[in-house]
Image 1 (tube, rainbow, N blue to C red):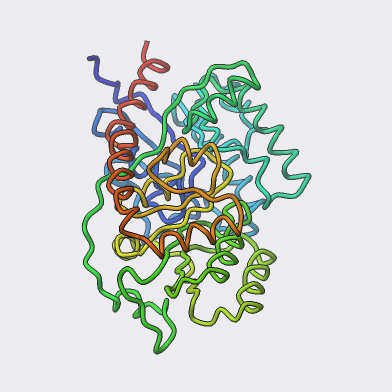
Image 2 (cartoon, one colour; image 1 turned 180 degrees about the horizontal axis):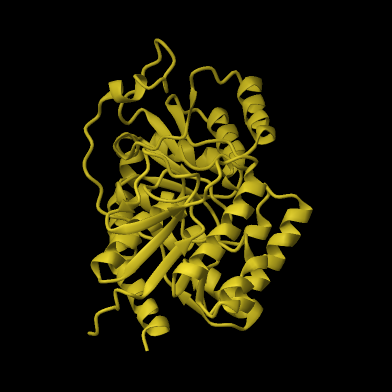
Length: 384
């Protein structure tokens, strides 16, 4: 096979940057970009915030470039960051891989400069409850711009691929997200409590807590999960890892906790970026609850399955595509209460699902295989 030209530059933009410290796009970039470098590609990745002495210019062979402005009001900042990344990458690279279509109104920039543009449409962003009516309208227009200007559309789930092809009559390429085999992390509560995640005199024991890892926003159903857990007869704790998307939603969830006298039953840790600590908590939870309802193939679900967790996921086409019959599903509060109590009453009868979920995720969602799919895409589009 012909080796990629080292003078051919690929820019991956739209994530907050690597090393990954946020969400699914960042996780994907950190997994794929270094592998593309190993395959012979010259890869650049955009990163938020000005570069200082604590930030590297090269990460695992990947060249990093930074937006020279510190983060402020997120909506405005992200728009400016995406515009800057599009312009800079259009000037410095031959092919741009844009993650998300929030900046879709500016996708004409690479085309004017005659650069190849690939867009990962992620999920149905304009359906997310965290956006108001105006923002949803802009996102829908941006989605249309992405389809109009992109040389290739990438969908990380078959459902998103079908949506794009059905609505816009334009072919999309299916390249999903993935996982790597996790390192086994021994239980050490001190790692958790020493960072202030536990209140004084509060204990957390292996297999004695349910776990949620997510951005804390409405479409991830954090309020539903909290309501159902507090309504259930579970004597275990609920650990929720992630940051709130807005103060309004935070107040809503905290009100639920207050009204139900949650006390120490529910632990809100905030975001945890230490992968060893995060995996320790994943590997030792009693069961995992995944509330994501809008989007494609979510890395948090893949990671939970890869660690042999018993998983309850929101019942939608995206989660069913990933989990099929290896995980359990819920639709609303009462549905989730029933699932929580079902698992709590007879965990051994459902234990076989843990191995089935793990086997499925490594059969269909392996990062090394997914990196090869990206290699094929760039070769087909960029090497003549």
